[in-house]
Length: 613
Image (cartoon, rainbow, N blue to C red):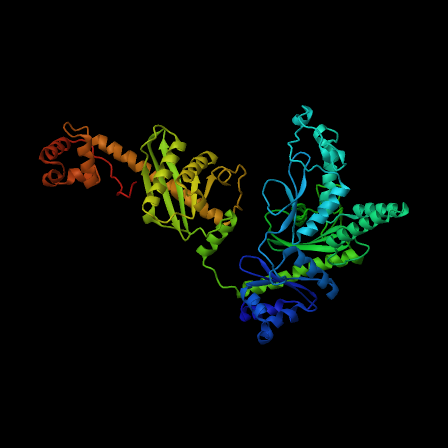
């Protein structure tokens, strides 16, 4: 990060205590630090470069921006810094000893879920907790879970049908009381799922009932003079409390709450979230939104539910700063704090929004102007989740009337503007009748087979004007050609402007006012216009050819040769016999002259040719 950039933003940095994060171009946190005064601490990175270590200089050079969170005291900053370091493992905060992947605890998505250690995360619907930097700690936590909850460890398919048919028998784990035998139906699914829910609550930080359970066990063993087992329980309790250590102590009177502060400015809405578990602030998050016609209360209600789900929150109380907030979870209390520690939490959330806006305005004033085309492409890249900037886009559309004269078009945009010299028209060769699916297969195959053979660059984005059916046809073609993973492919349905992705039944809805949707619509409309124009031209040519073939002795080949040269019947009639004879011969010239000298109607002008594939 350049010193000049920091100086432009420094005026908006508060002097309050807090933590700060240096972030690189890939949005990865490089370093987390604490500060008694955020302004003074951040300034030290840019005002005293000679006194910095080599590692610090490299970190600052790799950072492109920084973020900060304001807290009440320096002590809070110390605790929150520790939490963020544990959570994000910034490379400049810790010494990375090897290149191993991190450890996770997985709750498998299956009937009677297993809970186990893994280093790989799959998007299969299972729930993962982590990452953990110590495999030993994960194993200790799993051992604790196994002692508290008797779970199965086998990988049998315990479907209701298999259990009912008696396909399985209990194993040694059941006889040594590590499992309650769900394979034989000795434990109900409801009872098992309740244990899984308790494990999820524990992993999310809601473990007060488990600590009570361990303390009772420890006291019972001590009372029975089983000191070894009592000591074991104490060690497990200490381990569990250490893993779930508090990050920022808020108050002994505040337990599990979610804090949401909203501030709106015109059409822009900002919501800051603070998650508090067992009197500890364990996470913060700021959500931006754009208002359409909804009121603040509706926006807040909707956002709260999305954020609570994202952060796996089950807090029984939600604190807000505006009235009218209603949640689907009727058992969750919604309150507007006015005094005490809860009000201080709300003020902290509001303060963070205020500082965020100050910094954002400062950045917008000093930000370099982005060309409209660049901005539109970046917006489209973000909306579609593309890895590459969509500089080169191609869009396909078909046109036919009751199956006659089927044609297709491909329009090309580069840098968000039409590249008309690269437009292509397709005479459909292999399809009989009005079959849009088969037409799409033919033209997409021809287009990209040719690009591959000629070693020309592929587009970054391909748009199919049509719904899931035509998109599916194009998907199969690109897969067979081996380029499906090299481009982004989407389809746009006309009715609701839905954006479909290959093999995904859930459409994407882009904001109707978005520049990216307008660009997609422009491509779709241009492809449609180009296909319709070509279709009309082809029908006109066919009509005019048939007009000339009415002349006895003039065949289709001769008629097409004359039209290709003169463009219209009117020009053929106006031409001299010598000109016509030079194209089709003296006999044809005499036949044409004789026919039209008798007063036959003249043909219609044909538009100039454009390239046809």
